[in-house]
Image (cartoon, rainbow, N blue to C red):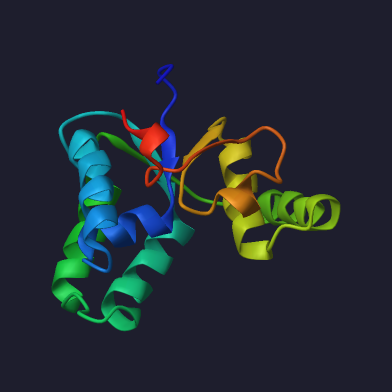
Length: 148
């Protein structure tokens, strides 16, 4: 990493805290362990909201609400995490990304927030959608070539 934090996308957070797929769980957990041990990372309030919803309602073995809240609180207060938020200009940039690059509004909001905050690398399983957006580098932690 070049000193700039990579953004950890929702799917990586979900796989780290839910065992949907054992291999992905181990790989995502490895990424998160490095962050909890001090490597810098970023995420957005949108990612944390999506994470909380998915791990408490959408997975086969949901986390208890207090467990999911503890993860979110840890990220919000952890010195190694930079939590990004959006504003009205971010929404307008996201709409532009939707128009120009056929991105979904939800992915475009994350991408616009990243670009606005100078974060250019996203760690995500969702390569196809984020690769559409100029200025972003996509790392899929679940591909063998993405091991660090």
